[in-house]
Length: 289
Image (cartoon, rainbow, N blue to C red; front, side, top):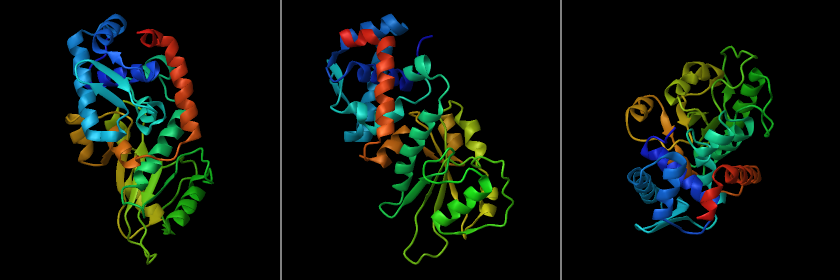
């Protein structure tokens, strides 16, 4: 099936360039390649290239691809280890999801949540804090939900609320928690509850967080804010508008912009490397152009 939408066309071009490496690729060979493997006419490939140009303007130096006018495109040096590449390869509609991981696995989810931790902690600048609340945990979160809430309250610096915490719950719809403490150590500071999703149906997934319940589990003077994090490059339109009425949206551009140049994550780097190796089997011809 042919790729639809400028965002996904751009995603496919980016992924093909990551598979190819840092050598420049002429626009004419790019047209030929995508017409052969996806039936995309040159004008539709050009729509994807214009979207890439827009992304470059939005993200500046954090966008790991270069567009050389009407002549060539290429990966920037170190593109494969960038936060952008890690997140983009997980997006629904990307070749990774088409050929390798149609259903995202646990490793992919954990890597994405760790990137979101870095991004969410930056919302309030250097004093901001965030942690991964999803299970399984590698930072000491108890598996039992009632105990996990007690653990989280201690990390944030609030008291446990009186609401009933069903032990069979997994994470209450929350994968990442971010907050901004104040030097006085008093309650009444901002808290953000983030639902991370690798699925395509964002409107349905964003309903997982019930702030009424969370306000009963954590004794906070102000209600928590909520956000939905997605690796999708979410276009302006009805989906964005519907989500923005209820949640802060952390799409690919906002996540990358907030995460900045973070420390290299060995798990993420290994996943990207092995994923690109697998893609070279599916998109191998791109490396020969």
